[in-house]
View 1 (tube, rainbow, N blue to C red):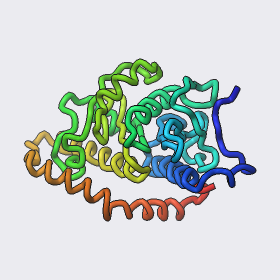
View 2 (spheres, one colour; view 1 turned 90 degrees about the vertical axis):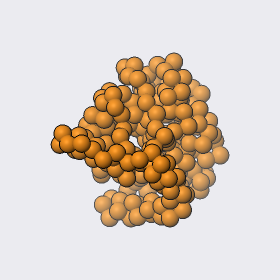
View 3 (cartoon, rainbow, N blue to C red; view 1 turned 180 degrees about the horizontal axis):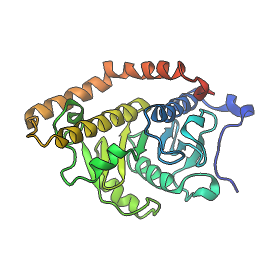
Length: 254
């Protein structure tokens, strides 16, 4: 039996406005991920908790390109099931996202990528250094997870969740990056800043010169400022990202 629940055109009217908005936002995250070049053909994933159904979440079908994802072809899955490609859903993506959303009731959206920049920072023992304003967003707000192979064993969920803790992001050693947020906007913007922070650090380290580390007190102050920013004026940038997408292709709304 196919356990996936995509939305046939005839039943879209039965989807609550809140779920439809969540679907559009998640489809936008996939399209933006492709636009910024963070996608990996059909691999990597983003997820969104279904409003009003806290034990269910949305993710893309396994075989779709990011540029093919729309609000209606996202699939709804239960985080309490055990799904794999036989059901049309990517097993590692289901394992990671189902585990994170199950453990963190404050998280509604998660984003995971395997970009070269992310992989490079994930291979450094030093981790993310506080050498840019982008990095300071994650001061004492980022976890690290040791590489255990392809993320398809449910037993790894416990360790993933332990290492993520209550943080906003996680560097998965030798693997990639993960960001989480209350909204699609939060998870996406955090990923943009984390990739930018990694890129800046790698460029600086490549010079071989001594780097200017931001003092701990300034990091703590700025990280708190960013949290207020995200809860206030920062939230307005999501509409701008959607306008940017609409100038390229509006089909993610469908």
